[in-house]
Length: 273
Ligand code: ARG
Image (cartoon, rainbow, N blue to C red; front, top):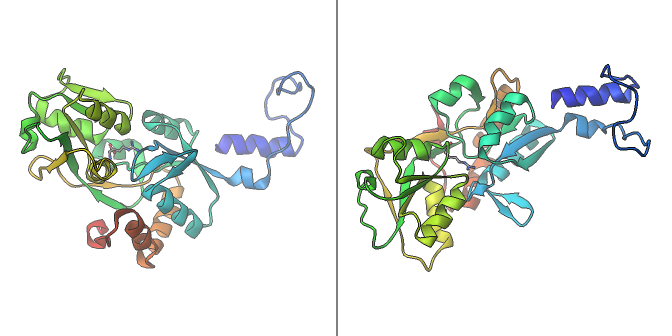
């Protein structure tokens, strides 16, 4: 993105940033493209995977959710322009590396592994894992996942949590590109249980009131984890975002957004480490 805006600035100044020919590159009409407006030049590009309600999901064309409102409040507080793009889960990690996005918000758990390759803001949400299944399936604790067909979203902490019980490369563990697809498979009866983040499991129950969905948590097997906004390693954005996040946590804006999506007041203590 930085590179793109530099190119745009150079182009606006009439310079040719590449060493290539001077021919217009936008087709054969001979029109030259408009220089980017200043707003476009400074807009941050944010990536998400919008199949993870209530944090981010699609409502028609719009991306909605707790993360979406939180991002908006943080950006407003920081005085930053941005656009939010639904790019998918795996691409979030690649795009932060290749610079095609500036930051990501997507219910992303801060893990030791990720923390080595990316930077995270201060935590903004406490989570843990839950097992969702239909009545008739016998699950009382995470250990009962053994021998069941389990669905998880690939490359998530839910996958790691399930693997910790049933082992890596277990053929009973089915990997889905999105959490929404794992739930669809549960609904169809193709998997017997889904392991995912607590608020996302609760949302599935809420959105399927006719179904007899059960949820089981297991503090012995599933630890607490925390979501952060993720930026490239060394990004100056981290400090700006942290400051804005702290401000909206202190001034009540965070609690307002939390109540809107979760119907309760947040326990801010859990976010203070
Ligand atoms: N919290 C889990 C993780 O970080 C799952 C996040 C999935 N988010 C999403 N938008 N699909 O691995």
